[in-house]
Length: 323
Length: 294
Image (cartoon, rainbow over all chains, first blue to last red; front, side, top):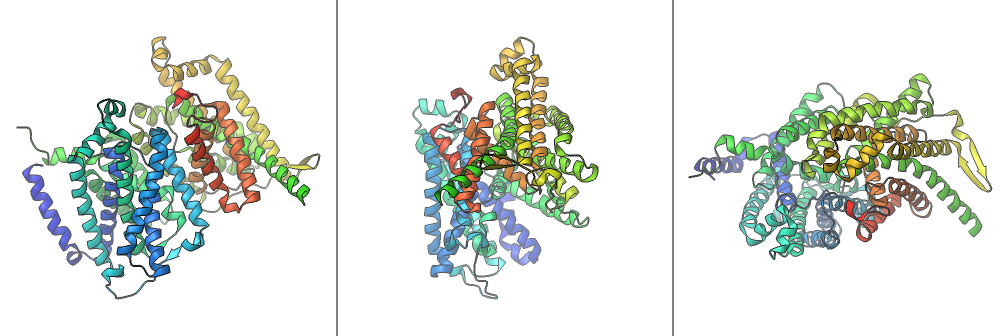
């Protein structure tokens, strides 16, 4: 990173910490959305951006995490800070199953992606018919007004803002550390050429398993946050393919495999989404917003296929100049 | 009791086979496109829904039976597919999978929401005169609309086989799929062949849509479901294999119908996804796929 990048990052950090005091309710809710997508984008990026394994079923881990923490809370009064362990354990188990089956039977590319979709859909239909989770009628958390109970995650948007900010910052640091670690180097080697990596002694299977379980665990945390922030869960949305696709967009648009790509992608996509919503509200046409959104996606993937961040970083002088 | 059950089971299987033929035709489009240019058409269900809407509109405003508007729909879809491939998809042919996925996802989003803008969210259906006719074969009763749709699907699939085995262009497309470099060396215009292939694939799914509207009402929200269904079918049958797609369509049609009879209706697609997972693990190239096509 160049000096200019470090200064910018510091200013951004201060602004983000002060945001709830500076922004109104609407702007804060948009910022929360940005941070959420930045977070899940980072989590997904570990698997695809670092290790090169395309998952189109990440809603599975977020949905499982959310459902388990919310279910433990509503049925047994177990708070989310304890429930999160069960949530993460379930997501890791699911990730291990998907990963084990996929990698053992050496499914690659499209085939692996379709396996991840199939597991998410399978789980969605299962939850649709599971009374404990409320079936297709959904699961609801009790909403209490004017409380700020951090222990049970009952409170206003300011609390959830700081929580997701901490998570987004944490995962950024974690990803940076992972990428610099031996495991991270192995991942990059596998991403570039799995056979060559295997030949020089990289434990390919174990590294891929590490990628899918770490990614699943981190995604489950987002699911727990999501469940307690929105207070409701439906199989139709929690495990939907649309949800999985949403998770993949920020890192792909921002820059796959980069640390700041998912963040930039989340800013761009959420921003575009909000602009299109307010623009198409004036026409009262359902679907118009999505058409704009689709066109924007198309233009970005056509003209910035490697993502926005690498290009942006070059133009803003954030890269270390070669000496 | 058991005889009643066996009869209703046989009835469900018969119904599943007929629907499965139309599923097979839809999946054939996806399979042809993937088999030749290795691009997964993530907008497949969306194209299907557009086909359903066009056939619906022809019936609603012109009184044309979908079986007669089908050739026009297929031609129109061929043209759309050709242009789409030439203009948008060709530059992505050699790009990484996730970029192709994003491009087709964007196309899918635009298409399905255009349907929403023009046709609204309500479900649209067709009431044909033959709606309540049926054919009887022994104790089994076959809905006339389903029989007609399945027969049309068989005819189109046969034409497609003839196209790929008997015509020069069809053979050239198969050559380009088998050996891209070789096709270039002998002077085939591979770009044009790819565009034709995408057109043919689109025509299949458009025709399947025109048939499907006679069986099932259409809403824009069906699109994603059909995309998934088409994936399941081609993976089960073997991505890139034409007979595999048809066989997969029949299998999924029957398994859905039987699961709908034995289990709760909401569980029926769980059965299909379960089948998909089993096939992916035991025979990832699909039932009729070739080993090297992975």
